Image (tube, rainbow, N blue to C red; front, side, top):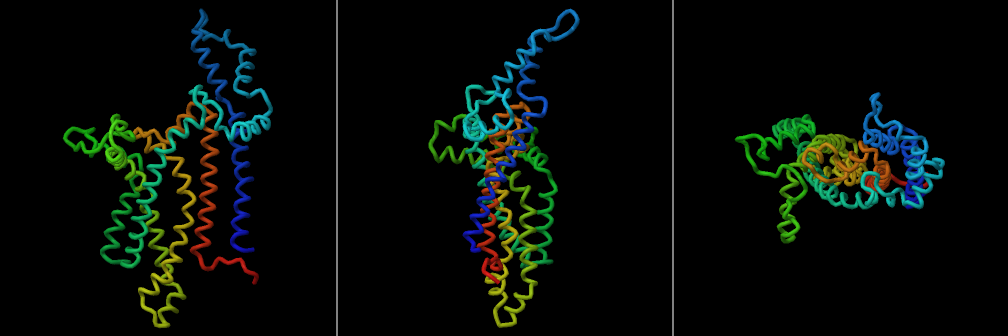
Length: 346
């Protein structure tokens, strides 16, 4: 089996995996209590007021009305029929109208948030890898030296602070929420209100100014992990027998590290690309809530707490597809980087 056949087989496995994820989650949204029908009935009871015995409008909520709501939401059909309609006719729920926003479909809500999450996801990804890989290499080459010790203190200090705590501290220090401290960055949001009426360059600069603190919180979570993975992986490769063999044959240390050890040290980094792609679209609920960013994280949280299963299932399907595609990209990168991967006959 060659590499192309391997990738085709991995691609074909995406289909049953996606079906399994969506079937289980779709069934749970139909079986668990507290769905959109129950929420609608609760609203009706609250509107009905209370009678002389203190009963809140129970007479208004009849079994016929419950059945009508089930029919309105499409819950009166068998679960498998509902799932097939959701998967095929509704394009994985993208064409279903939101329960909270009846005039907008799930895709319209998601598509309005995707650009925001992509801005933060891609920026955080580039900064994380462009900083952590060189830093991990530098720490490995200067192992147990002063640079390694000082940088380790800074890395672990950033890793020890939770993202929400770091976000609150940054807002206190740089957003003027505490009297006497600096008012350098905006409190939150993705861009200013006037962004639509200025030039493209000014709008880009305004977005960058809004993104500084949230991106710092995004990067802090992966900073220590990526740096230490890169450092430890490179140290393991430098101490391997094949590197010593290369040195024994007369190659310089620089040649042995950059020509042989570095490529193999990237293997653990490459295996993490899949989760990064999913994060582009999933966003971060905590960071987006702290900085009031209208991204995918807040949309998924609002859909989940509001029992807007139409939007939630569409988000789940999109995130699952991105994660599965990311795993394929990780496998492809693994094939390119790892020289031990081959599919020839023994």
